[in-house]
Image 1: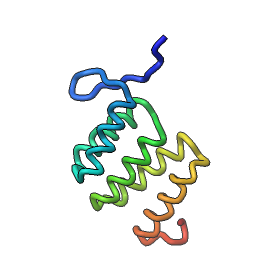
Image 2: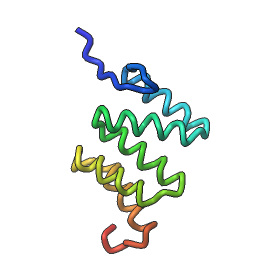
Image 3: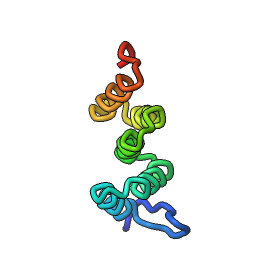
Length: 102
């Protein structure tokens, strides 16, 4: 039985691991907007904390700290004890000048 999760991307069904690898390659190549689009699609459809973490990272890199904070919060909603999400949330809060909340 094949239990891979599939999501829709550009009108076609794709296995999540393949899309995540593509998004990671795009991120590493500096194609940030396209990588973000893929990670957001996977995060929304598959509800993966790791995908939300990638969304947070890319939004932060693209100068969108409030949107990055929203993604960190979504990752923490899915995995409340995720240390990467907790750390990234603190970094984003500090960037937004909300050091007391960080």
